Length: 277
Image (cartoon, rainbow, N blue to C red; front, top):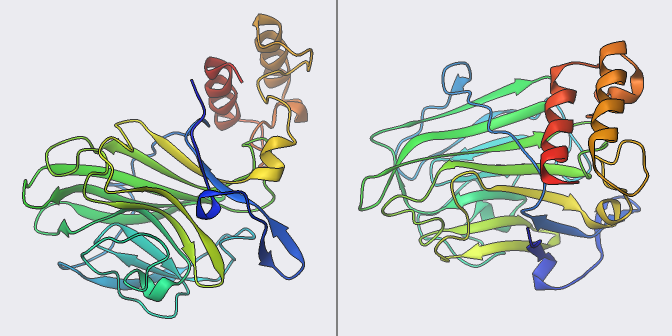
């Protein structure tokens, strides 16, 4: 698969994250991710049309989305993180935009005018990940259901290619959605250049698309994660070595770097292996 990358402001740029820490951010669509349905287990977020609400304080964090940030969830397909304003308007715009949380820090998986009469929004923490999910929400005016979610990853970024967050799309190609035809998709911060993935572009995302907000320097500095024996090839030797380490509970099989060797590590390795990297 050819890599598609949306870089900050459409070009390479160095930006400040926290204190003296700097990084180049990008959105890529070539890294694996898994849709984790929380529609039956997550905390329900009660929102009306055009509504936003303070939902919780971020219980995990990384250098882009700090621990303890106020999380503002908008019905119209976006989340603000301690933004200066809490409004997420119904008319999407190019980023940065004051219509989206006052141009404050926000992740916008599908900023559009979304109906609220059918469908739901939930959030849930699972281990070191926070998930926010829009389930069966209706497009306007076509009234067709769409489902997507974001994942925020906490702690020290490891073999997941330095991913800060992901936007994962389960059902986004129906009438009214058309994979982004009516939406602005990306990341913005009032102090930093924005990362625009798409703006009112049909098929910018599809069912099964995974968009990852990454640290480019970290991403480029890593070897292919599925090359478990680091011989420059991804083949059965890597699979066998990982399987042996996994069965033995060896720390080298802690593929997602969460301190445990379990099914999550096997699933992550398998996703990389199937992708060839």
